[in-house]
Length: 311
Image 1 (cartoon, helix red, strand yellow):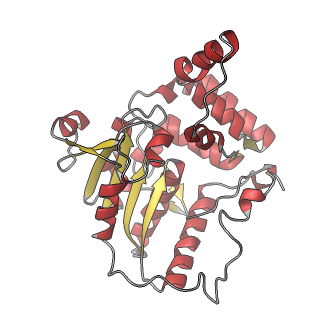
Image 2 (cartoon, one colour):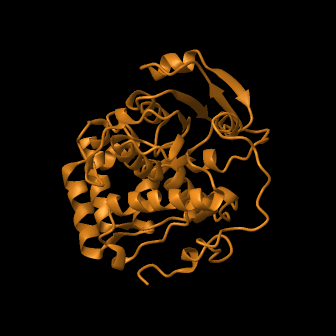
């Protein structure tokens, strides 16, 4: 698991090249520590975007350090209508770009406000009525803590994300260049596990499903219940959860859903089986963490969690 730094103005120039190269370095670190020749990569949301650009570059040079990839609640195709499209006007995109260029980052609070206004009835007016007008205490549950744990985006990466969003660049072979290589998602022929969440307002599941049509290899799609964050922090064995598995993904997500089967539990369960079947034999866990080349730096959750943004 990568412990990402919360960037401040001092990291304003970090872009997709910066992040993709760090993921590549992390893959080498895991291989050295474990003694494995390759790894299985999982990308969540924006992390999936970064992973897809690196995997495209690796495919172009015959780099085989990754054995399979999983994308969870990740949009790579922005062609469909979705709530985030409300922020897609040229004036709004230009305003967002100017703000990040001026400050060096888009802050977690600014991004959180934008995401909140995609569901105003649930995330704005409901709280205003219950807490302000009715005087009730706000509910306390774990998902709110996850939602509050946001991160800044550096100016350069934010600008690239805006371009990807407005021009649907990842869905166009050669529309974007990362690590000096034109991105072509169709060149990624690794086995891929793709999941979406049925109530996700940030990365709607039909958009996530489109990844199955962009990649060039075997794909598996699983649809989770709940929303963006709740689908990820949904532990195996959860009796309140359910998910759908279906046939080999074709071009129509509605046809896939019509042929899918509903299961009780968390989508992590079929993911675990899928990943295990594409992994090597099980071995005993190491008695010590790290290695001589990569000693332990500290306890979880990592050093960057305690950093002050901009420091």
